[in-house]
Length: 353
Image (cartoon, rainbow, N blue to C red):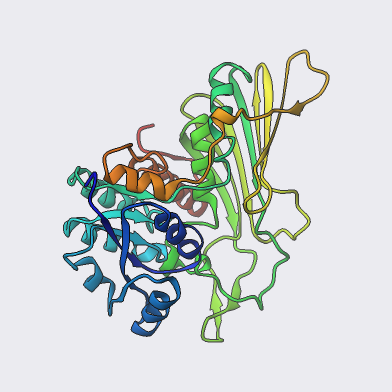
């Protein structure tokens, strides 16, 4: 499809689709929006009119089976990702799917298998945006020996934290039937860390449900089973340990999300700001009196180009790197291992360990 118009349909037109995917795809030449399917015919029509997405389809299946659509952008909650992806690939559609990849690693493996069985179709999971600006430079610094051998990585993920509030509305991430084994933003932060220092070989996790009941969407009280506080220690295949703490229930006064990478020769610290702000990277090596800011060279500064990469991959210009199904399955396997460790109190070894 190097020079042909790529016709895109949307399933789910939620916040991230509206913020990133619709404008990102619209900015690409030779892309046409031809339809949308939301949770109801009425909401489909509203989205179609508001964002100029073309036809409002009565169901997602009608859209996937439409012969004039080349690619699908999936913006639903995780509970539908596997089903829609498998059906879309079976109908010859390219797939850009919102994170998280799936409800669990079993669904993720089904998605990867279907992708591999259709090598002419492009599949992509939306990647985490937090470290894009500095990621490649930090990877290169580590590879060049800036920190030496990695001893320990500490990551504190606190950006969504607030004081516990049982009167707060239930978010879809709190509902296991919609989110599966995904816990807060743990999976995408594991992906961030994985890109810097590699994958986990084993993990031990503790977690707690700090707010046991929340106000449901129908106004009734709902029991929560997904943790809002999680602490994990995991070993790296490449050597070293990672301490990962994720919380949404420890009050609002915590510092911003941050990652410390401690090695035998140096230290790197990454702190993320608010939405759209570049992370701040500092570092120090043996012999330095203090840590200082590390400037990311312009030629290594990354940016959000997910939709561009998706369309370019369809046209055969470049491969998908952020994120392909193979890498995304790794964070689903880690998510399942966390769940098992938390529930059994045992260390869990990941596939391939």
